[in-house]
Length: 81
Image (tube, rainbow, N blue to C red):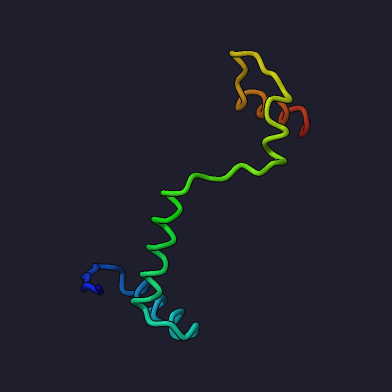
């Protein structure tokens, strides 16, 4: 059952969206409906871990106090010396 929804958006965004919808032969309503469906569908389905990634998990062991940001910063400093 379709239901109306009123949105307030910037005029330039509305015009850009209308042009995009027209160039793709789809109504603006269907375009927004499709976007919202995709957006909400992603939140419900957790990311599937591929077999390759699963086989790699646990290969590296790090100290509990290991800081990824510090390590990456140090790497970049060494790289660009």
